[in-house]
Image 1 (tube, rainbow, N blue to C red):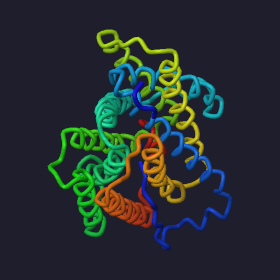
Image 2: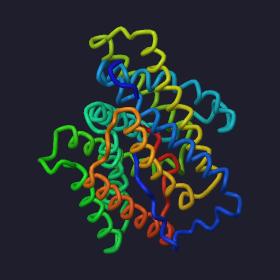
Image 3: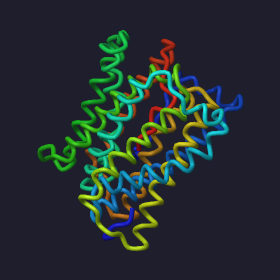
Length: 317
């Protein structure tokens, strides 16, 4: 492969955000979330590096199939095989289908873009989720949250054209992937109170195996031994990362855990430089900071208003 290996950004946490509870025993949850974010960043670097040599369908297949192993090992903590039962197969189908579309668009865009820029754009997903919750969940979004969403999109626009030129097709694909994932967040707000998290992860992962496996034979590129190990590693790392993230949300509330997701921006900037020699432009850094602050404000407002959040909102990448 020519290169080797969602997201970097610094989180400035508002003092009003209820994270003081972390001192009351939430350290384990925070540690799990930090580990999950780091592992997802490693997985993203691998996807980007492999994307030059292998078709997206092949990468998605290997992202999905090996990931089932960590999931099955985690099943006892979720109640055994019964945890895979679903009361809403229709919602699981929508979540899995849209998730696979998001993964296809996102992985292909990632293979063609600067890692930090891609991750910055991917953080627009919660912004889309907030807007989509209005028509689909009947949620009321006040002027403050709406202003934060619009501000966040201004940051996306700034980061999408980091060199001052027009927005590229790949940036639009990354934005489409973020929109699809924002849609998934809305579905998962309903699923979170109906099915166990293991079921949602399983059906999404299974969909990746089926769709990726159906397309892969027509695009198959025989990997080298090293690349085969890296392809398998994409799935295993993604599966283990999902376990850590699931455990994080079991150990602590969303208001405590979610802000640490933005540490992905730090890893994206660091790993992107170390592996690919990419240095984020000032526009990307500024856009990432704007998105970060907007996202944190939205989280603060939703926490203050007592709105429910999905427990597995980052399960796709």
